[in-house]
Image (cartoon, rainbow over all chains, first blue to last red; front, side, top):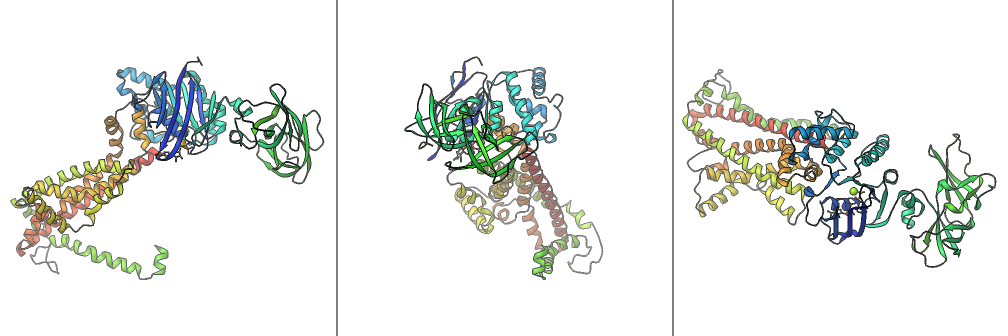
Length: 367
Length: 269
Ligand SMILES: Nc1ncnc2c1ncn2[C@@H]1O[C@H](COP(=O)(O)OP(=O)(O)OP(=O)(O)O)[C@@H](O)[C@H]1O
Ligand SMILES: [Mg+2]
């Protein structure tokens, strides 16, 4: 990342008749950044991506790519290329002609084009696939062809609309790393749309979380996980227990809170959230909670409760624990170290937390 | 089918009878075209190819055949071209008055042809267009457009719109995208449309009868011959050829129509 801004979206708005698909979208992407737009279905991710690509005109607002205003510049003249969700491999052409499709207007000689095609196919580990027909490709290979076809154009920005959603889980996970590696080796901006939080977190430098046509938060994966801007973001990314709390004191940069069930805790102040009064909500990640049969030592807060449910997930086991004074059962997840499910429904257990893992989510009424 | 036929035991027989009544007369035509007697009646007295042989020396017939090829060829090209743009618009875009527009295009399928024919003749006379092969082509284009639109609509419905977007995104122009992506992918649909509209036009009688003036197409020529009993065997031979030709074209058309489906389905995989 060199710090120059590559894409600027300023006050973007998109309306379909009376329906507001995007509202007041402001976003600046640095050169070389891998950026993801993350959000639930229908929140406007594809709309935003298509506005950058030039397939849609925003109702209001400015799109700048590499400092240039894109108003009136159609998709075929923008320095962006897109990998479509369906991959859109031309069914009547072979792999080489698919990848070389966009080069025919580039003024390159036949030999130069051939070299560029080979280079692009090598990038996606499909050397020698030029003559393979489009219908003789697996899902993963189709995706690589779509990538090569876009990258061969040497765009400033590569746009990807849910590029991995059509692949099976195993392939998806290996492609996550490959896409990331590819982006780092070509060094151009990738803007990816996804509704899969893990995909967004493993691949992106920064993530923009969207709800209902609005950007709720733009941050790095770790910041997003540790300091969600509100309860909605907190619930969308990872698992989260929400507990009511009372604000007791505000020492410099920190908060003293009384958390329902757990008692007094000293936690970090979250700069991104709103606060009106002493009524707060705090968040606790299931994997950051401790669970044991005997009262644990060395934790900032603890509470006793009853197991209401145990669920085996393979790599983790989830326990639901009912605690007096807490409205909802608290979810605790523990790594599956020894192939055992240690607690069953009805067991009396202790749960415990450190103040450092408790997340300030601001005013209770706001959420 | 099995459950239905158990519920209604007579259904199978009904369907069989229905098909026999529908197609038996048609099948009699080729049969009697090989009969060496001039009377169309059983028993068949002997087999001959002479009626077919005589066709080649009929000048009027050959002229009408040429007329039919001209008319059907032009009609197929015009209605397929119009149908191509209409079908793409209907499938890809949503616009005001779309349903009305689609309904209007399909109207010729349900309008009595005799009404259309007399209306067209009146209209052409009014604007000073004399009946000719050109007026038949106009009439037939109107009549065959629904077939073209229906076939091409199904070709576009199978066709992932992001294919066109991808081409445009890769720097291709709008006409370039149409030529390099849209056309090749719907090409089998276009061939199917050409074949079907050609066949419909080639076989059409009423409009051609009203609008062709003194240059009859093949069906109009056949009609003029039916009045002469002595000519009946020749007419039957001609009719059999026409029948065979039409069936062949429609089988080809169906083959191409399915091919579009296959290509489009491959693209989606
Ligand atoms: N052409 C259109 N006319 C009217 N509404 C539209 C149109 N295109 C999209 N929308 C609406 O705009 C909203 C955002 O659509 P968009 O496709 O951007 O969602 P998305 O976040 O990409 O969802 P998904 O994850 O399901 O792909 C949706 O509610 C959708 O119904
Ligand atoms: Mg989408």
